[in-house]
Amino acid sequence: MLETASINTEQFFTNALDKLDIDESRKNLLESIALFIVKELKNKKKVNLNYICTHNSRRSQLAQVWSCYATHYFKLTKIESFSGGTAVTSFFRNTVKTLQKVGFNFQILEFSHQNPEYLISYANCTNPIIGFSKLYDDDHNKTPYIAITTCSNADEDCPFIPDAIQRFHLPFNDPKNFDNSIYQSQKYLETNNQIAGEIHYIFKKISELL
Image 1: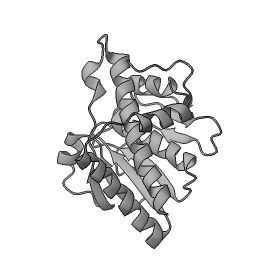
Image 2: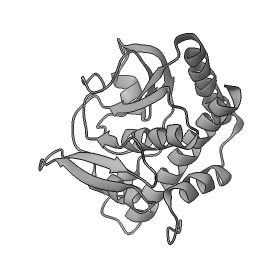
Image 3: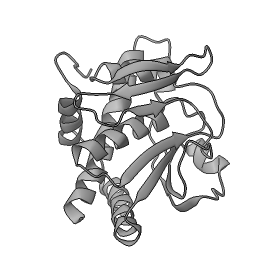
């Protein structure tokens, strides 16, 4: 089980990369994403990333938050990150909890029983993240963007994404499978850790190539 005592956001982000255990094909995929982002930055000077998962409640939200954090960490001001789904649900409470455990602060921006809107910040944050469940083509998500699907269903359900200049499939295990079990907190933290590590890997490569 991952320990969170005394771990702040920067420590967690750094440790996630140090502990990252992925095979060569996954590394090649992460590097392909980084290379394409660098190419777009050099050509267009600005890039939007849209992490897409079916319900925009767990994995895509984690990816957006860590992607936003990575732009702060590496001082990559020309990258903006968003997320969306093929259906609207909510920024799931267990997803919020696992991010709070590693130093993210959540403030209710707009209250809703079904789908509250959060303002998410962290230490030395200069640009808070707005988080809520929405469709991938919601007006909040800037276009055009690089689409990164984080679950198999989203990849299968979106055969065509009109505003995507490129599309990558980067699936993660769904912690939802462990909801209401004794492993719930542990599995959400494991997914949080993997996504943080892989986002760190991508953005470190971007930083090195620019």
